[in-house]
Length: 420
Image 1: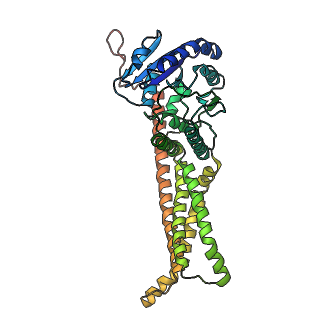
Image 2: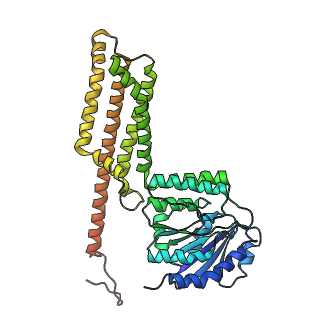
Image 3: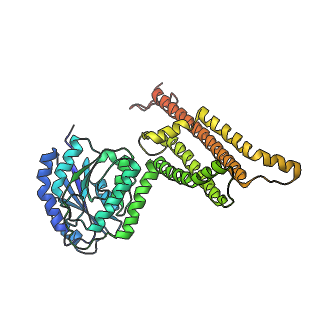
């Protein structure tokens, strides 16, 4: 196999004060990067993202540097993706043009990508020597905590502007956004899709010129990018986490009325409000639990690699099926009958109901849970039919491919006569 090569993309928007220095540092580090990681070559691509100053003009002054010019601003992520598309490297890197990152770190990052078979290598800016502003450092820690909580894998810097990616791994990362939330979205997709992501500590300097990052606007976009990745690759994690929160709130609200009833064998009238809230929380919690099981079963139909391997979603999906599901439906139907049947019988005999509101709410809750579970069982059946049809179509396609071209399709040789 031929040795890998690296394409370094430098996205730049009105960076005439910094672009020259960024290119010179990349050129100076090129030989070191090639030796350290055993690369065949390193190519440098500058993408002027709608710059209205001398950014593109300065970049063209350097020999051996490819310059791509967007007439209009298309976004930070769009510039990187276009540079990668026109580049030829099997390893794809990028760094910001503002002078904050040292391209010499590409040597260690590429070596990690090659020797440790990493899909994504991130230069982490969160070390003690980092000169990142305190507000952005705090934001990065919050995003890293949320992403770690949702995906179960820790990362220190979700939005680093210096990375190396294997070209062959892009199929598991795309589509990625065009804006500044390109980097946190990549981090979320890599971690949630079980790609191998490695962080390399690096120094981070103060930028040259004015930052294009808006702490509030882009901070919200970063959060949305993380949650978008969760919904795409691990929705059951978010659903199950919300279920646990609802269940905890339900237990806390129901604890006092339950204790009061077992002590006095009655309920106070004011407790109806707490019962209604418990009804809503319980119904919502069951819906989340059923959705967790359903999305886990749908894993193979989505864009992620294989099925999820988390214990709790797997356990929920394993329980909510077959005999257990049938037994649950029967129990809920019987329970709703136990609560509601006296009122139905009384209404049929006398035309009015004196059933206590607590029994009515409990019966309505049981019946509501039965209906939700019945719909879930129906959706599981639909999913089963879809999977079976997908398997049959795949099998038919493989069988047709194995048979080769049909006899009706005559092969025409050089003589122009059909082969019998």
